[in-house]
Amino acid sequence: MVTSSARSVFMGPRLRRLRRDLGLTQADMAADLEISAPYVALLERNQRPVTADMLLRLARTYKIDLADLAGDGGADHTARMQSVLKEPMFADIDIPALEVSDLAVSYPGMTEAFLRLYTAYREEQLALAERRAPDLVGGGSHPGQENFDANDPVAEVRRFLAARRNNFANLDDAAERLVHEPAGPAGFIERLRERHKLQVRYLPPNVMLGSVRRLDLHRRQLLLEDSLDTAGLNFQLAKQLAYLELEGEIGAAVEDGKFTSKSAELLARRALAAYAAAALIMPYSVFAKAVETRRYDLEALARQFGTSFEQTAHRVTTLQRPGLEKVPFFLIRVDPAGNISKLLDGAGFPFAKHGGACPLWSVHDIFKTPRQIVTQWLELPDGQRFFSIARTVTAGGGAFGAIRVERAIAIGCAAEHASQLIYTRDGQGPNADEPTPIGVACRVCHRPRCAARSAPPIGREILPDDFRTSSVPFGFSAD
Image (cartoon, rainbow, N blue to C red):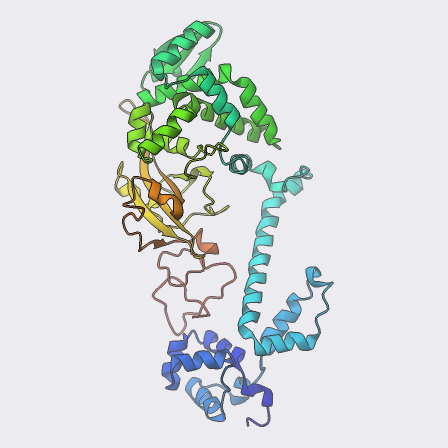
C-alpha cells in the first residue's frame, strides 16, 4: 500500500487536516493511537514518515477509508496557495507550480502561516470596504485622506493629537505669558472682569437650561451653573479665558490640522481650548517640576493644583515639549459598557482602531471599586510591557437628582519608565514579575488559552466541537 504512493509517506499536512476535522488536539490523537504527543507533532511537521502500520492504525481508529487517508499529500495546501497566488498583487512574481507544491508539502508550517496572513489581509480589506461604502455612495473622497476619515471626525482628531504627541508648545507658551503661576478661580474671575469687562454670575441648573457655561456678551456676563465643584468651575473659567485670549494660537493649531470636515474642525477646536485651559490652570514649567517632585502622584498633584483626578491625568499626557519631555503616557476613558470616550496616546500603546479593548485590563473592572486606584502590569502578545494606573471618575451630579455619569480612566507608560512613578516599588511595583497577559482586541489577539475571549482572532481556524468541547471559548486548529 505504501509503495503505491511514495508521496504519501510524508503526509504531515493531511494528518493535521484529519485531526482538525475530528476536533482533536495533538494530545487527544496521541492517546487514541497510543503514541506520544511529540511524535504526532513530528509527523505533522513531516519530520517523521507515516509508516504502513501507522496508516492502518489511523484507518481502524477513526473508521476512515485507507485510500482517502493516504490521499492528497499536501494537495489541499497546494490548491489554496495556487488560488491565493493568482491575486493581482503577485502578478509580477514568477512562481512555478512545482515550487508551490514543494512548499506546501515540505514546509506546511510556513504555508499555514502565509495562508493565515492572507486571510487576515482579506478580512481587513473587506472591513475597510464596508467602512468606505457610505462615503463612496456620497460621491468621492478628500485628497490625501482615507475616505472614511470624513465620516469619522473623532478618529481624525485623535490622529491629529497623536501625531503631535498631544503637545502644543505654542499654547503652553501663550498660557504661561498670561498666568505665570496657578491662578485659581479668583484670579481668573478678576482677569475676566478687568480685561474683558465681564461679570461672573452663578445660576441654578433650571435657569441655565442645560448649559454649564454661557457667555452673554450683550449683558457682559459669564454665566456658570452653581452646582459645579471647584475643579469644574476653575476649568470652565479657564476655558472661557482661553477662547477670549488665545484665539490666535488655537486657530493656528486647528488650521495646521487641515481637517476634512467641519465636525472634525470643531472637535479639534474644542480639544485645543480644553488643552489651553489646562495649561492656564497647570502651567507647563510649574507642573512639569511638580510631577517630578511628587513622582506622578496624581491625587497629590490634583490637590496641589485644585484640579480633578481626570484633569490631572490628562495634563500629564501633554508633557512632551521638545527638550523638556517627561514620562510619555497614554490615556483611555471608558464607560461601564466599554465605550471609549477619550483616547490619547503618547506612549505607543497599540489601541484597537475598531471594537472593544481587552477585558482583562483593570480599567474595565474598577467600577466595582469606585475611587480606588488600581495598578497593573500589562504584557502584550509581542512581549511589550506597560504599567497602568486606573480609577473611576464622575461627571455631572452636584445636586440631588442631577444626572451623574460614572466612567473609568487609565493612564499608562512603557515599562522602562515605570520606576519614575510613585505607584511602583523601586521600579518594580506590585506583581511586576506577573504581568497580566492582554491583547489589543480579541480579533487581533492570538493568545489561544484566554478564557475571556469574545471572538476568535482573524485568520485562525476554530475546532469543531462535535467530538470535543474546549475549556476556553474557542479551540483552534493548531495547538
